[in-house]
Image (cartoon, rainbow, N blue to C red; front, side, top):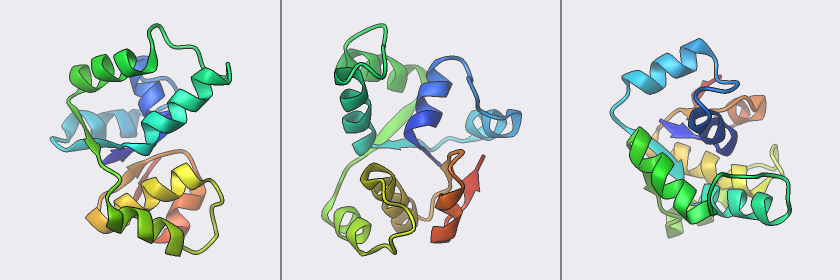
Length: 125
């Protein structure tokens, strides 16, 4: 399963706004991912002062990914092209990369964003 950016931040905080069901599914999976674009999105939020992390984003990611056994999905050509071909239901380009990665790999996404379902992917809320 893929964590969207908010889900990763909440998991790193000990659960945050993740539902009990989402936390259970995360705990039960052996394949937990974030998309590389999440690093870009979190870095932008930190730079703009909208997010404060206890360490620089690169260090924070290294710690959180290792602690939770999360792997990073790269932004390969197929993901990038599919993100441009998706219907314009969702305008956020970072989320479109996550949706494209989920569709290509047939993985569910942990997110509270209801628009993800409109792309025909499984959503864990």
